[in-house]
Picture (cartoon, helix red, strand yellow):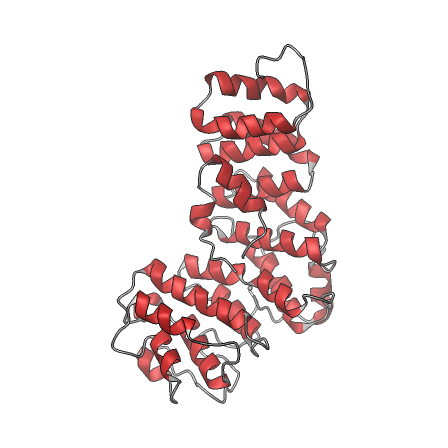
Length: 353
């Protein structure tokens, strides 16, 4: 799965915004809800602030599982003391127990690990994923640190058999407010690839514990509209809904309309919501798209609105788009031109050829 830095992707130039949000590519949760409640989560019609529920994994700093390999110590203990048994040499390098803690060294060690890692090494990776950058002795900057952890998560998803407790750990990371936003976002990005890996040839059972946890976490994540996390969750739900019936396209569309119409919604999530509305043909968002295409505070949001006009608009929208090409900000031109190409033809005397 490709690494995604949503905070950067959603702010790229015109063409990239449209492509990244709709492309297939990669790019996670646990509430203690009972199966009966979870069966209904995939059809919730609107974004609702949900009461946080304790993750099945137990306390966020010390999983309730009793791993046969690594046992995590108190979060107050030094990072190195959290590993109470020996790990393989390469995993020790990855998690930062060697003297060399640099990015290239740890990335190289990670690349040597195969798809049949022993349980103890997997638990060592789990401990690394739950660590905090501020408490970690490292020669890497934050983005390098999270890049290594993102690659480690990808490796777990590529194991010949999906590791036990992977969902438990993903959701615990998402729920851990002491983690930085980038890493919490990365954990949400991995929800959808996990589902695709576990149920690549079968339908997701609505009462499966892993799906219950993922579904609940998704509906919680889309309420975090002040960060990139809501958009990441919405995008993951949209991708799943295209391959699985356990979450409906209509539900995803309603969530997207709600976020796109919300003036208080952060820009990254609103951009994603607008583009999903366009993809899912949610015509009810057209008035908002028209308004934002002309009045949005930022070029990025304006570009997303123009692209949505191209998906949903009619011949009456051509006049504005044509004038944008003539006198508008040049950074809007690619989006306006692409939108015009998708709109119905109007007056044959149009000023744009």
